Structure formats: structure tokens, C-alpha cells
Image (cartoon, rainbow, N blue to C red; front, side):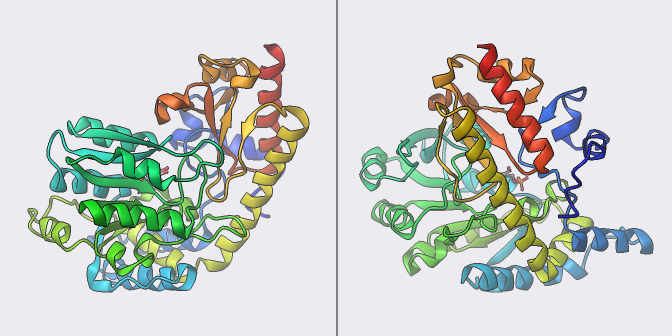
Length: 384
Ligand SMILES: Cc1ncc(COP(=O)(O)O)c(C=O)c1O
């Protein structure tokens, strides 16, 4: 596709960007770590920001802020069969802000928050920084399924929240209906808040639909804070715009009682770009999803041929791949070893203690760059 030119000019372009993915390490490294895509953002988003620039239109935003809740609801209905009521939606600058605030408002130090591990590292920090208690609910490593009995067994009387991302980062699982129902049932039985971070919801692979948590049951809808953004799907992470559905009435009241600027203001470029994506971004997203599935399959094929001992379950969603490098003898710190071969990945132990010897690899790039990334992985493995 045109967004992924297949020559070395692409690497030069990436290395000229100011975003953290390519600029942090610089030099000759290949960046396959943080969850940004290498393709240029969706043209509709670029056009929306360009229109602001052309009009010198950097004032406090009104237009997009007014329209975003309805656009989000329509987008969810079109893509995921969920039409959240517009008056239950709140705009945030980013997903993690909404999560931090929800934990802060809904829990006290010492309260338990269940995480489905391995898990996106900022969730661990969000729990631990506030003095809350991390309750570990490990996913079954044989397929990364959520086991209802495990979830039931970890909840204690001071548990207040189940915090998850659906689809799941780093395993790439798109949770099935029965798994989400298990979360809803356990939450109902213990009167827990569910926080469902659905930022990856649009980026599923064929055969693995995204199921929004509030669609699982009316009870689930009434105890879930669901948060989403266009930032992963359309590659807008720096523009800072997110939307939350306040299904949980008690939490909604606590948010509504906050001082008027506690949630910060909206970014005009972020809001306009997000609105453009949720209004007109469908076709572009289809093309990107096809590319990401092809990248996933290419990685899987080369691993099977060249590094068959690496532990790898084909992801159902995201462009992230969770790889067990322990069979290659990379037990202590695979990340350092890969870095010596010019490859930067996300270290598995950031995702919880069971991540030791694992890495998270981002394949949202061009095919030639993905091949170069895999070549470096193979070289590092051969070097022993
Ligand atoms: C599960 C998950 N939630 C949230 C974020 C970040 O969202 P934001 O930048 O809106 O805080 C990411 C980024 O990779 C993510 O993977």
C-alpha cells in the first residue's frame, strides 16, 4: 500500500521523525517497541489538522468537541454493534488519564485491583503508585485465555476493580464472549467496577471480532467504565484525545463532582483529527487491518521456519506480538542482547514478573523493515 514505501527512503523518513519510537535510540537501531505505527497517519486525520493550519485555527475547540460523542457512538455501532448513549460519554485527553482518575476516585490505598497478567506496564504503575494493591490474575499461558476459576479465586473482600484491556496488550487476545461474561459475573458477585480499556478494539484480525464489554449484559454495562480512542487505529498517539463511557453511575457522579478543569482541556488538533477518523476513516482502516494481518502472518511464517523454538501464539488483535525467547537461551535479559544486534523491543519483565525472558514486538511497519527486524532477531539468536 502507498503508505508503506518499500525502499530505504522509508527508514530515512522514520529516523527524521520527532516521535519517541524512532528518536529515542536513533543511530542504526530498528525500533519495534512502543505501540506507534510506522505508516503515516490516516489521510483524513492529516487533512483535518492541515485545515486547522491553513485557517490558523488554533483556538479553544468547539466544533469537534460537540460532535465527538455522537461520532464515537456511531463508529462503535457501525463497527462493533454497540451504540453508547451520547449523554453517558465524557471526553478525555488520553486513556491513561481516565484510568488513573477512575482508580483514584473509586478506590482507597490498600484496595485490591485485579490485573490480567502479563499486562500493559502503565496499568501496573497506575495500581502501585496510588498505594493500591495489585491482585494478579494470570492468563493461561497456553493460549492466554482468561480462566473463570482463577479469576474467582483471586478476588478478596477488599477487591474493588477489575482493570483490563480488551483486546489485550501484550498477548493480542480478543476476549471471547464467555471470558467477558466471566469478568462481568465475578464483578457482579463482588460489586466491582470494571475498567475496560478498548483502545485496541478496531485492530482485530479476521475471525476474532472485538466485543465491547458493555454489550455482554445489562449488568456489565452498568458497572463498566469503557475507554477508547482513535489513536492506535489511526496512528494519532501524540494528538491526545480519548472518550469514556461512564456506565457505572456511581463513578459517573464522582467524575461529575470534580473541579471543572480536573480533566484538562481538549486538544483542538486531536479532537478534529479524531472526529475525521470516526466519520470518514473506515476505508483506510480496512486497508491497514489487511496489512497488519499480513504482517502478523509473515512474522509467524518466518518464526516457524527460522526460529521454531520461540514461544508464540498467533495474536487475534493488535499489531503486537508476545514472544518467549527463553528457548533461545535468552533468559535474563533478551532486550539487551537484541539491542546489541541493533533491534529495540519492549522488555517482557515490564509486563509483570512472568514476562522474564519474553519480548513484545511491534510489526506495524513496512514489509522490508519487518524483514530487517526479523533478520536481526535471527542474528541475535545465532550469536548465542
Ligand atoms: C492498552 C493501552 N491503553 C492505553 C494506551 C495509551 O493510551 P493513551 O496514550 O491515550 O493514554 C496504550 C498504548 O499503547 C495501550 O496499549
